[in-house]
Image 1 (cartoon, rainbow, N blue to C red):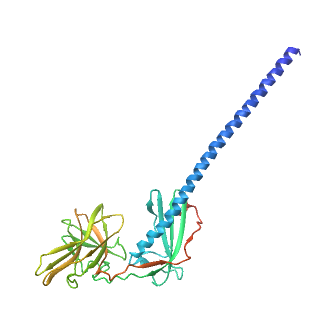
Image 2: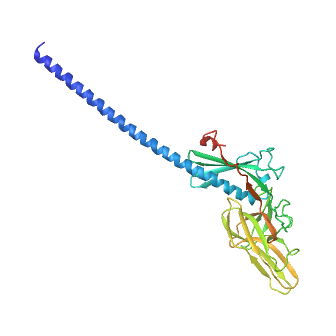
Image 3: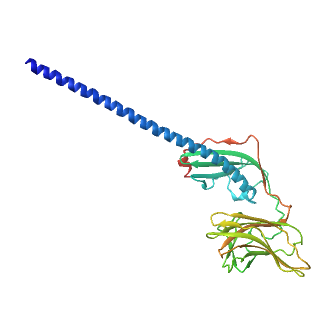
Amino acid sequence: MSGLSLQCRKSGLRRGSVYLAALGVAMLVTLIGLSGVLATRVGWRNAALTAAALQADTAAQSLMDVVLYRLTHDLYWRSHYQNDTWTAFEICGDGVTGSFKLVDELDGDLANNESHPARLYCRATVGEAMRMYSIVFTAVPPQTNNLLNNPGMESGAANWKGDRCTLAVAKDTSHSGGASLKATARDDHYAGPAQTVSGFLASGQSYEVEAWVKTDTGTADAKLVLYCNGLLSLSTYYAGGTTTVNAGSWTRLSATLTPSWSGTLLDAYLKINTTSGTVSFYVDDVIMRKAGTGRDAELTPMPGTFRREVLAEPAASLMQT
C-alpha cells in the first residue's frame, strides 16, 4: 500500500470520528432540551393540580356551610334524604361540582329519631382534584306554629283554591314530603293558589309568611299577597317583595305582613302569584304564623368532629357514583 493511500484513509477516519462526536453532542443537546420541555410541562401540570386541589378544598368546606343552611329551612330533611347516600353532583361554581350525604352513625336511620346527631359529608371536585370534609351536628326541630291547613300539600289540594287558575297535585316534584301544588291555566299574573285565612286573622297583627316556589319552565318574579276586606274599609292587598324563581330549583319566598281593617272582616286570603306573565308554577311548604312565634331548625356542629376525609378512589371514579 502506498503512503498516499494510507494517509487518505487516516484522514477519512478522523473525519468520521469528528462527525460521530458532533452527532453525539447534537443528540445530547436535543435530549437535554426535551427533558427541559418535559420538566416544564410536568411543572405546569403539578401547578395546575395544586391550584385545583386548593379550589376543591375551599369549595368542599363552603358546600358544608351551604348544606347546613339548606337543612335549617327544610322541615322534613330527615326523610328527604336517604341515610349514607350521596346526592347527585351539582354545579357549585365555574368548573366546580359538589355533592353531600348524611349519616346517622348511631343506628343508620335518619328518620326514626330527631334527637340523633348526624354526620354531614361534603365533597367537591375541580378537574382531577377532589376534596372531602365531614362534621357531626345536632339538630333541634323547627317550630313553625303554622296557622295554615295542609301547608305541605300532603292532602292534595285540600284547603286551597285556584284564584283564576287551575290547581293540580304534583307528586313528581316537591320541596319536601311527597307532593306539591301546581298552578296552571293562569289567566293573568295575579292568578295563583290561595287559602282563606279570615278565621284567625287579627287586625294590626304582624304575620310571617313564606312559601317555596318553582316554575314549570323559564323564570318569573313571584311574591306573597295577603288580601283583606273589612266591612267599614276598602279591600286591601298587602304584598311582600318579589323574588325571581326558576325551574331548576326551589326558591323561598318570605315576607312580614301587617293587615288592618275596620269593622267585621268579610274575607281574607293568602295567595302566591307573579308580577307578570302566566307561567305555570309549583308551590310547597307554605307557612303563615304570628310574627316572632316561629323558629327555624337549629343545627349545631359538635366540637372536635370536623375532619378531612381520606379519598379511597380517584376523583374520576367517584364522579361516576
